[in-house]
Length: 391
Image 1 (cartoon, rainbow, N blue to C red):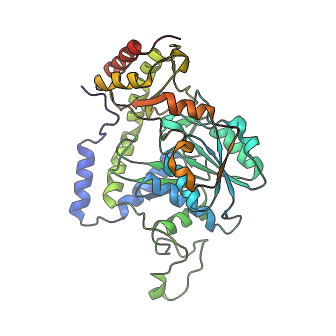
Image 2 (cartoon, rainbow, N blue to C red):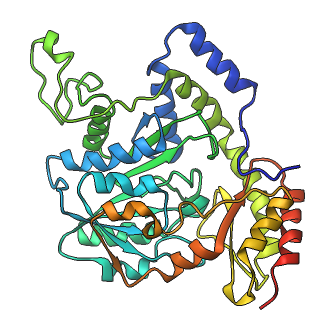
Image 3 (cartoon, helix red, strand yellow):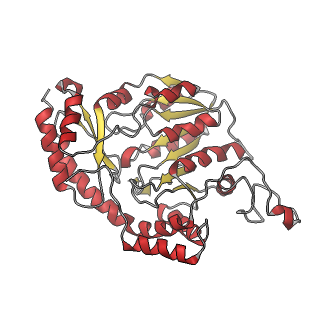
């Protein structure tokens, strides 16, 4: 049986919820989306949640909202500190809004941003830190938050891979000025496609809602802090106050999300059981580097970096896994500096990215799911045990 990278988390409840929406005739963004937003805000311990059609769209409007704040808006040419490893759409909105990126290496054992390098990355033009919790493992969000507060910086928290992870008694996704989540098929919960932006800031909440739907005011209350409502309802119904998008979710996604969110604690518990078994097999093996858990991981997947001193032939390792029906892929997006798209960016690198390069060249991840994977993890270890020499 194939050890898959992803698996469905749906049951009859999600199918029934989807059918109820279709039967209702209200399929565009409506009351179920609003209910799901409120449920997410409550679950993750924030005041506001804004649903969109993907985690990438969540990143897009999250970054964009900072450019329309009344006080201290971001401006083109401002600098943002970013980790060297993340998914492409963590970075693309930053480039598209004209920001300069300052790349910082990751910690080899957590794969998250190396916070010891934040001071070196700081310049008079730094306005924001982007922090990403890689594949379920919380970044040093508390350290980043304290550093940002000390220096008057915004925090953009990309939590698309680490839903339900926790650090210092708080859910990941509750540390940033904005935080984003993804509900893609392979993620912790799935609404087919979908994403969410979380914030405690009322102004940002309203900016996000405006950006989500054409830049208009229709989704905002009359007393919104981002515009002054006029008296003519005819024009107010189609009043555009900023250059927005159409990244609204479907009503069916909101309905499915409500059912998935109910199951999330159970999903995370099962994922963590698998994580414990994976750690028992791999943690003390000198041939492999696996993620050191920081806080409480929600175990999106299992990362493995082959130690170069083993002399392992990575191509043979990959072939052995393929022959044994074990699917694998690069860790998140690898070192983003190694991708062709970087030629379009205004950026520099703070102190090199040796760890991100090592993860890029010698690392991979395999899937984790909310059901028992003991036999699959055992098979993975047995295959690697045969093809990876001891150093």
